[in-house]
Amino acid sequence: MLDYLARAGEARISEAAKALGAGEAGLKDLLTRLKARGLVESTPRRTWKLTGEGFRALKGLGKKASSLGALPAWTSLLALLPTPEYRALLRLTLAVAYLRQRAPSLGPMPWLGAYGPPGTGKSTVGEVALALVGGRFFDVRAMTPGEALGRRRQIPGGGWEVEPPATLAGPITVLDELGEAPPELQRALFALVNDRPQVVIEGQELPHRAAIYATWNPEGREVPLPEGAKRRGLVLNTTLYARTLHKAFVREGVGERIRELLEALPSPWLDLAQAPSPSPEGVDPGPLREALYGLLTPRGRGEVPLGALRPLAVAYKALFFPDSEGALVEAAYDMALVLASRPGLLVPGWERTLQALRGGLPLEEPSRPEEGRAYRALMDERGRRNRISTRLKRLLREAYRYRALTPEEEEERADLRGRVEVLVGELEREASPLEALEADGEALAQAFEAFLGRVKHRLEVERARLLEEAKNLKAQAQEAWNLAQRIRALAYKDPEGGMRELEKRGMVKRIAPQALPSGPREEGESALRVMQGVLGAALVMAGRSEGWRVLAGAVIPQVVEAGRGTATAWEFRGEVVRDPATFLFHMAQHLEKWAGKLSQQADSLRLRAKA
Image (spheres, helix red, strand yellow):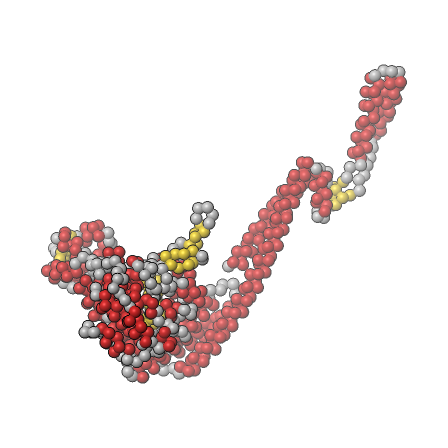
């Protein structure tokens, strides 16, 4: 905005919105804040223009630099972060983002994270990283496994592939409130904290181009991910500095001041594609890595990604420190600052060893764990209360995912919900005894889990029954359809055979054939045929050839009538079938309709089972 006003001289909000491709409401709010800082002013012509302070600020900001170290605002931003550990965590996150985008195969790239009490600025560090180089912010509580790892899509030819998710695009992916992810989502997110340049999802290899930065409040486990995540990451524990961070972010408003500074430059501040190319020449981490390894405890040696030191030093050289040796020591020291926040990973006196390796260039002193057992005990108690409350709320949300409950189950769920609301209210009162509340919370959680187990078992049994019933109905529908097609074909070719097919299935009944009674007319016709036969025989004996024709006309009708009198008869529901062909045709139509109804019932049962 400042650059546009400098070039335009003065402009209306609508003109600036059109030129910058932004909304007028957002620009009006931005200009109001810039005016409050003395950088712009409005004119009687309802236009805006730069002030002298605005021109000076614009000269100081300049264009996007090729590295963060070249930006004057970068130093100001680091000074606003209240602890050296946060500055180290921010630099490490940006370095991994640079490596993922510019040198994904240079070496292992750790994921980053911060955990501790609420209000300590953990999410703010992620927002700062996003503003500096770009990326996406995800609230884990609203994520799905498909959003985390991508969804399957069909490709031409009938095959399937995984659509690359936004979480792998980068440059940075912030996963906020990681601790509240359900177990199935935690397993999906575990694939993202991979230190390799590719991720294998459903057998398909996808490029991993995002630095992962996660935040959470610890609930039962230090890292709420499957085993192995610790060895791949650098995680900061903010509990040791909670009082300092609370004071800075809650009481002194450091977060708001940081956001004001971030708005001074267009976001992102740095285009990683324009950053210097990675130059690993001259970066030899051997001695320093050996020294850092000697400062680790046995536990630390199993949880620290020391292989990331060289690629991190290459990124530090490109982004922050052009001197190779300085970049290497700074990267190692930042790693140590983050590791020191987790007790039991580094031996005492580690900082003196690393500072001696730096020579005459000073390193920041690490923050000392805050004194005052009472304050740490208070923070620990709040964390315990929060863990109980979060666990119960998560179980309550899971209980209300089920809709097909019996009246007894709905009554039990309502009772459990009332008990949860009462206990959560007690947990919010710090004067209430924590030990008793923990016992009550554990008993209530077990009751919830037992209730959910019973509901899940009943629904699984009901689902299996519905699927079995749907399977049987589908088989009956297929059998009815096949029979309909068979008797439809036989209705035209072999009605007798079609009736026999129905007889096999008990649908019609064969009755004894009966000769049709002869009436007076039939008796007269028989006498006439006898006389005709006598005449034909006399003519044949006389040597007349036409006698054979007369004799045949008298004999053949008698054979036909005899055949008609002995035809097979069928009965359907107490009535004699007069015309088998027509009967078979109508029966085929009825069976097809019946098969369609059975198929619809089977589909309905399957939908009920799925729900």
